[in-house]
Image 1 (cartoon, one colour):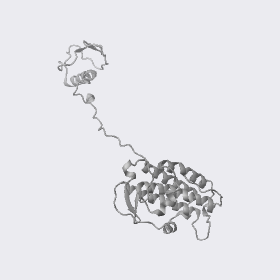
Image 2: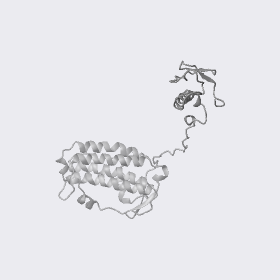
Image 3: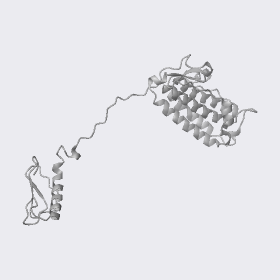
Image 4: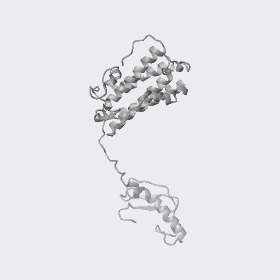
Amino acid sequence: MPKGMPHFALVRGSGHVRSDNPPVVTPRCNFAPPCGTSATGEGLDQRTKLSFFAAFCDLHRPYASKNKHDPARRPRPQRARHEETLTTMPTERPKPGEYNPYYDKYISLILGNDIVGTLSSQLPKTIALLSSLSEQDGELRYAPGKWSLKEALGHVIDTERIMTYRALCIARGDRTPMPGFEQNEYAREGPHSSVRLTDLVEELKNVRAATLAFFRNLRDGDWKRQGVANNDSITVRALAYIIAGHELHHRNIFEERYLGRQVRAEIA
């Protein structure tokens, strides 16, 4: 018997284990040595002896698990403990010098400092407006040669994708200058005029969800990083405000010009 192993003996023919070490655990045994044989299996043929020792090992299992060398008792590897880096929302609005003054018309529409909250809360109003329209409304143009409502919505979607990509590159420390984009060419080459309005509305929702997921995970220093896009210096937080202001700007245009509603231009 292995040294240090609690003493026990097979009760011949009973199928039980008697242990001298309390508390008593009595596992079931499916094998008892035949009469005339010892607990060590002496006097058995090879095949019977193997069966005997297999049962003997099963009996040891409740006790062997206490052995520090038993794989079942090995301590689980500890996961590396890393300090959690909490994401931080920007507490300051973009300042002059962080963006081209052209974008003031968008940034000025957004009030307060909670830009992520604004991106989340203002979209449902745009979705509600667009979802109330018919497919025929998607073909509306407020003047000859102007984009249809669907093309204008496609422009909003394209612009959000591009601005978020710019923010991604800058937040990741990519110093490569990024090109501008010609919005009229994008509208002309895009598929938006042949896409159902309901599908474009769903696409806008999906794009915004991706935008929010990106901005929510930025750290404090990421928001302040600065890069170059369209030959102008711009920060990550300025791009976030531009995305929100651009959406709101076009929602006001949808209501006033495309739908002819007399509404006061909303400021978020």
